[in-house]
Length: 124
Length: 107
Image (cartoon, rainbow over all chains, first blue to last red; front, side, top):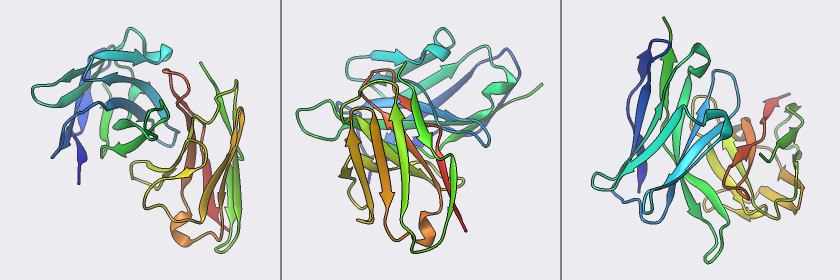
């Protein structure tokens, strides 16, 4: 059973950066996309962006443009999300999620596999 | 960006009740609509994809319908493990967005 395994909790100072990793255990990226979703305490889900590791193509939510960088290392089968210029409002659980086409031959995709989440706390 | 609006934001129901949650998109998204369940402290779980297709392993009491801009998630005969928060998500645009969530609480 493939799982997405994320790196551990982080505590960062305002103005610094955080980099979270996501690795599928027992599997590869294949043609899937890896997306990043965050959830501030007591709040809803917020899509940040995604990457198709096979092609290296990325998409970012407008809110995070210029502050977030999503990459994938095909040699280690690991995806990364780096968020810079951190502020207290970035305190959240960060999830990676696999995007898969759910119907063959279509672009009907969904996040069918999620990582366990990584808590990032921004505090002085 | 496509805005996704869920209603209600919360509801109280009893075990055995039928529950309906709605999700409206700010523009037509065909059937590019997914539903997720999130229990406290856990990662979200895919329930329904492509508006009405049940994800493998998800109980048949969950169903989805709709197309275009208006969508519905229905839970028939609510079970104790169904008390959670539910989110819709559009995958029509490469810039994907979630609804604000609906918390289903025990009455």
